[in-house]
Image (tube, rainbow, N blue to C red):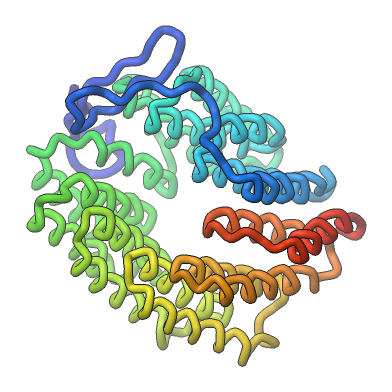
Amino acid sequence: MKLPLAALSLAGAFTFAPASCSDSGASAPLPSKQSQPAQPRAFTDAPLSEAATRLLDLAFRAVSGMPDVPHRKNRSRMQALLVDACLEFDQPARAKTWADQIAGWERGQCYAELADHCVQHHIEADVLGLLAAATRIADEAMAEEGSQEWRRDRIRAKVAAVHLLLGQADEARELQTGLVDSETEHLAAAKAKLLDPALFDQQLAGLDGVLASENVDQALGALKMCVELFARFPDDGAKRAQLVDRVTNAFPKLPLQMRLEYVLEIADAAVACGDKTTAMALFEHASELVEGKGWVLEDQVGLRAKVALHRARGGDAAGAKKALDAARDLFQERREQIVDVFRGDALRPIAEGYMACGAGEEAARAYRLIVEEGVHNPNSKPRAEDLAKTCVSMVRSGFVPEQTLWTRMKTIAEALGQPW
């Protein structure tokens, strides 16, 4: 099944593998290298430790306590972040329950992300119902005061991507019409997954055209597609080398932090396919991007730690530990220059990195510091947000707070209130 070029907001033609969907809306498996399709799974959460469950519940209670006035938008944004975390930890039922409680447009985005998760993990769910609800919320969002097109189009782009994965090209084409450029990135992953390998060279030429343009938003979509295509060809070194070259060298005007995200993503993809040499070279390139640049201090600390975290996950624990120590020391030396609400964001990658290195004691010290740094602001909103993000970080890294730290976190959550 081919979509005409005009239907694609990123350059290039795609041949889509057929997929189907039952009348009930349950998702169909994506095309697989396996001879037998994956068996569908019930709409249930994957096993999660008691500690992880407690941390997620504490996070959701903390942010859900924000009053509707004046913090409805902040509350919805943080609740959506926690729904994303549920999907990251394969908790679709919990994600649906929490998404239902979101008052803002983010609920539609969460439904679309949940539908995508169910399709890609072969989970039996009313995928079409979720997509319809997401689309309705996207349309309703435009009727609200202060509505912005990108919010509607972010939902529509994700809904379109899921329709593509289901083989529903007509539905996807309709939703793509008129999308603002900033949201085309959200279609890139689905398109890359369905690209006919025979069209790789044609697609790469199209991506080069996009990257040569002055459009940052479209370039982000092109780089996302490069990362996804890299994962599609784990045994083709020539194709992978071309894609790495685009991510590291194309579009020199792209802001460094944006480029860094894609460099780390493609490095992770190299680790996943066993190409450690490429991964280590990319981690070195990422380090060069964050060192010696004119970053604000919290970004300098956090980004150095983030690169080290990815390096640790890639197998270089020693190199990562050295970089994490340097980031920690930089924070300690210049802490007073960082506004209190940004200190947790700088420190959390350090704690996660130490966990990835197997340095549990250093991680525990970092998490204790993060919890205390998060309570300096006199207002409850930033304290709730910081606590929630720290809880998610702990679950992501596999850290289990000792009883004293857990009690402290509960006390912080229980003290949230006026002034917000």
